[in-house]
Image (cartoon, rainbow, N blue to C red; front, side, top):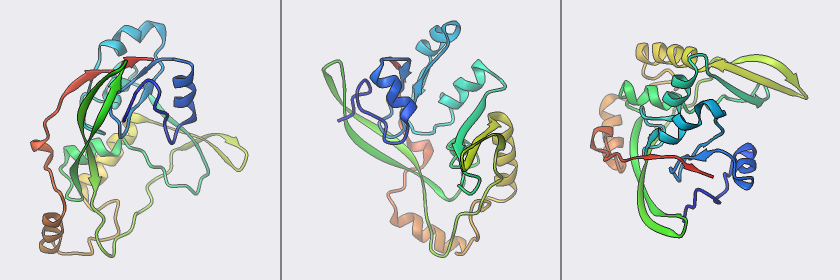
Length: 211
């Protein structure tokens, strides 16, 4: 059961702070919901914005909203220089170029809002992990300030997306050391998965709810 007003994030302390103090808005994707803390001058835009039910969808998405509110939007993260930067905006590009390592998987469950329960279907753009492949490190964002053994890193979202799109368009296997398998072997793997092509996904669009 997913209740966007009280189901806590498992990865984000800032989101949980917002939830416990009823701050901002939350999107209704149980897999990857976002808590948005808009300034007063853009609150009406956030309240009216419709988000897709597909995790990491091309649009309408958190990425599109952020860039429409601020063309110079930055992603800021606290980590060590050795950690891999798992920047989920990459999924938008992978959908756009129809990367062969991704497929849609449907998740069904129940959502409850203010006591009203309904069955919901959401979709996640899954990565297909094939034998003998490994993640390739991507360029690190810029270090903007040191913090203990790590630091605060930031990158301009549009620059990151443009760089990643150029690399993955030139080489669909950019994130992997491979390809280790032939196209025929990959096709055989795909048929064994619960593959749902993006064009077969039925999208619904809903506004984020006020916490």
